[in-house]
Every structure is written in structure tokens, then in C-alpha cells.
Image 1: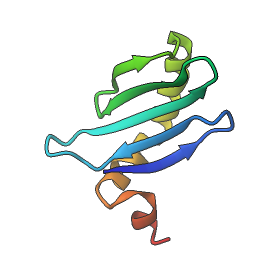
Image 2 (image 1 turned 180 degrees about the vertical axis):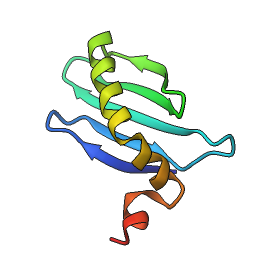
Image 3 (image 1 turned 45 degrees about the vertical axis):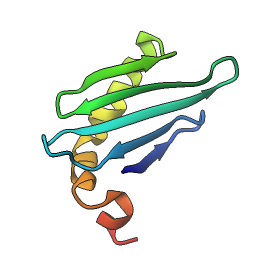
Image 4 (image 1 turned 90 degrees about the vertical axis):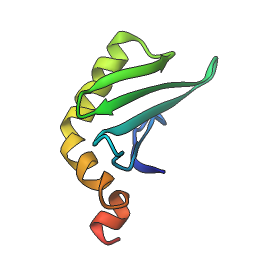
Length: 90
């Protein structure tokens, strides 16, 4: 299951998985693109291992890396408690 985390002003959406048996969490980033429909990438926490990058430049991945790093502790917490809504009680 994937849980919503952030939607950026440019339409980029960041979602994350629940914590997997191997204690990793998949963070998935998707951005609409007029020419390609969508650009996407996955980052596996806690290693910050990027995979399945499609359409994003190295500079964009670097910017997303900073975002993911700044909220990784929250993502890991939320991944164990049903996402933000369940973890926060909203």
C-alpha cells in the first residue's frame, strides 16, 4: 500500500509504502510532464538508494534527495502506522 506524503506546487507527488519486512520503505515520486506524461523515480529508505528513474535530471534527483532526507524520519515513522492520517489521528 502507498500513502500520500507531499504534493509540491509543480504537481509533483511524493508517496511512500508501509515498512516492508526487510525494514525498508519505498518513496515514490511522480511529476506530470506535457511531453512524456509523467516522470518518476523511487528512493529506498533508509539507504537512500534511487532506482527506476524515468525522465528526471540529475539536478532534479538531487533536489528530491534533499526533500526526502529532510522528512525521512517522518516517512519511516508514518510507514509503521498507516501513513500520515493514521499516525496523526486525522
